Length: 169
Ligand SMILES: Cc1cc2nc3c(=O)[nH]c(=O)nc-3n(C[C@H](O)[C@H](O)[C@H](O)COP(=O)(O)O)c2cc1C
Image 1 (cartoon, rainbow, N blue to C red):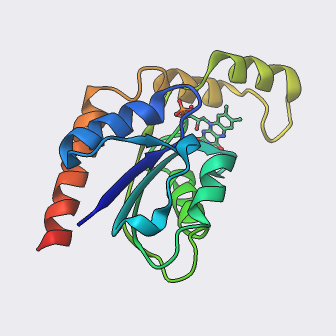
Image 2 (image 1 turned 60 degrees about the vertical axis):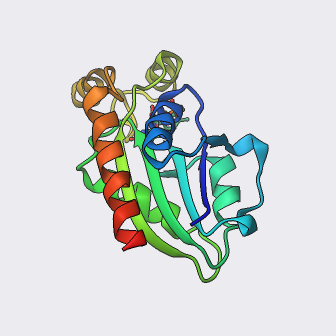
C-alpha cells in the first residue's frame, strides 16, 4: 500500500507528531508546501495544526484535492484532546475531503500555543469577549505548553501502528 504522510505545521508541533508517525509507518513526512499529487497514493495520512476550529488554510486546500482515497487525519491543537472542540476540529477536517474519500482514522493531541498568539489574544479580545483571555483559557494554554510530549508521540505511534495493521488485515 503506497502511503503519503503529509503535514502542515506553523511552529513545529504537528511536524514532531508527523515525524513520530513516519518512524512507525516507515515513510518520510512531506510538508504540505511540497504539494505532492494525492493521486499517486493509496493511503493518505494528513496532519494539520488547528486554526480556528478546523484545519489550517494550507491543509484545507490540500484536503479538498484528495478524491477517492483512504485518509487518516491527525492534528495538534491548544485545547484538551478529549474535548468536544477537539472532536469537532477533526470532523471539520474530514468534511473538507474531496469526493469519494473515506476517513479510516483520526488522532489528535495537544500542541503548545505560540507565545505571540497568546499576546495577540490578550490584546485583541477585551474581558467579556468570547475569546477573552480568561483564567481557564490561560490554564489550558499552560497545560498545552509541554505538548506534544513523549507520551503524545508514543500514543500517535501506537495509533498509527494499529491502523496500519487493521488496513492491511
Ligand atoms: C491563528 C491560530 C489559531 C488557532 N486556533 C486554535 C483553535 O481554534 N483551537 C485550538 O485548540 N487551538 C488553536 N490554536 C493552537 C494551535 O492549533 C496549536 O498550538 C498547534 O499545536 C500548533 O501547531 P504547529 O506547531 O504545528 O503549528 C491556534 C493557533 C493559532 C496560531
